[in-house]
Image 1 (spheres, helix red, strand yellow):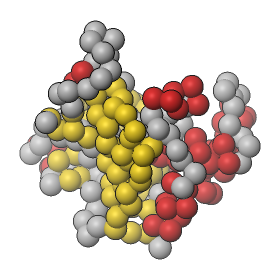
Image 2 (cartoon, one colour):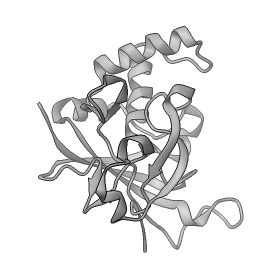
Image 3 (tube, one colour):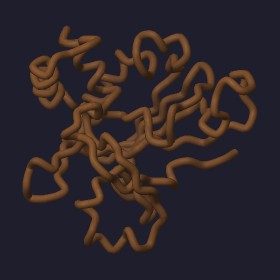
Length: 207
C-alpha cells in the first residue's frame, strides 16, 4: 500500500553535491535493485539497459505516476533532494563548491513503506562504488507523513517536470523556478528521458 513518506539520509561526513537536484532517490534505488539482481554494468548496452529497466520497475518501491493519460509520461513519485547548505565544513578550500555542501539529505515520495525500509537496509552509501568512502550513510529516517510533497510542497515545485506537462498548470505562475535541459526519470542518461524541464529552486535552504 502506497503512502506519503519522508526519507532522511544522515551522512557520516559532509559531501559536496554536483548540482541542486541530485542525488535522485529513484536513481539510488535503481542502482541497488540492479546490484541485487546481478544486472549492474559499468557500460551497459541498450539491450542491457532495457532489460534492467524492466527489473527496476518490477522492484521499485516508489509509486509510478503519469502526467497525462498517455502512459508514456510515467515517472517515479519522488521529489528532488532537500538539504541545508553548510557554512562550515572540512572539505578544504577551492576544491569544492561550498554552496552545495551538506551532511543530511531529505526526499519526499509516494511509496510502499515496508518495501522502502527493506531496501534502505542494504544501502550504506550514496552514489557509485568509487565514491562510497565519501558518502557513507550514518542513519536512515523513514517517516509516514500526512501530505504528499513529491511534486509540490507549499505550492512550490518539488521535482523536475518536463515543461510540456505543466504548461497549463496555474501554479507555475505563482512560484519561482528554473528551466533547464534535464534527465527527469531513470535512467537519466537516455536521450528519451531528457528534455527541457521546470526545475525547483526552493529545495535548498541555508544555515
